[in-house]
Length: 65
Image (cartoon, rainbow, N blue to C red; front, side):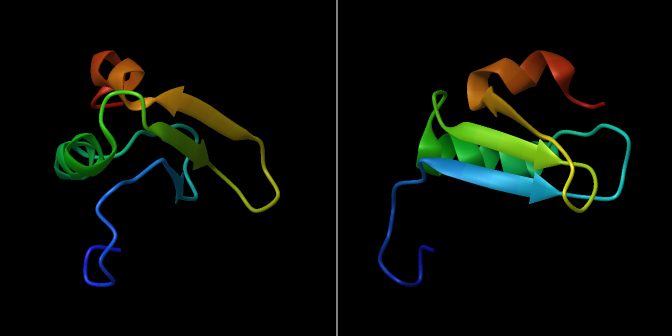
């Protein structure tokens, strides 16, 4: 994203084969730096599974899960 000249992140989707998770602290730092507290962060725990969406600012109380 950054190498192509973009510097604003509006939303990101994290996918992992786990029951529940949130982005790690390093990833959250990156999300806050380029997307801010209102950046939408979705996570999906299996192929074709439900996508749960939070604002980045809502994830801090859940980290680590």
